[in-house]
Image (cartoon, rainbow, N blue to C red):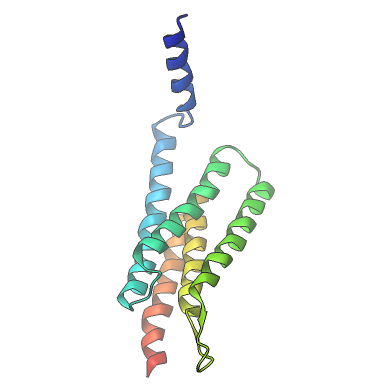
Length: 156
């Protein structure tokens, strides 16, 4: 076998982690759903003029889905995937903390709802990545209700 053929064989084997069309469909469906649902939450935040909007929520949801999807697709046991989820939840806490600001002059805290929506977007991504698509959709609808409907009521 020539060196070039050996290199090509190595490249092909490195990109063979998707076994068949069924697995490819599952991966694309779960990641796309995570992005779409994260976009729905992010769009609502963007409409409200918040800094963490559409793209942020999409990326958070996609990242969370990917962090769960890869171990699950690789055959990790539920207890091990649980530790991955714990890491995501803690990590998103730091991202959310960056959205929270305390105004020194009047001691007002801003960004708590946006931080919470980032946290929910991660949970939605985890649900989608783990294959709990209906749960991801239902929780997104509840989050949008809380952000949109209850947000308007809260302003009155």
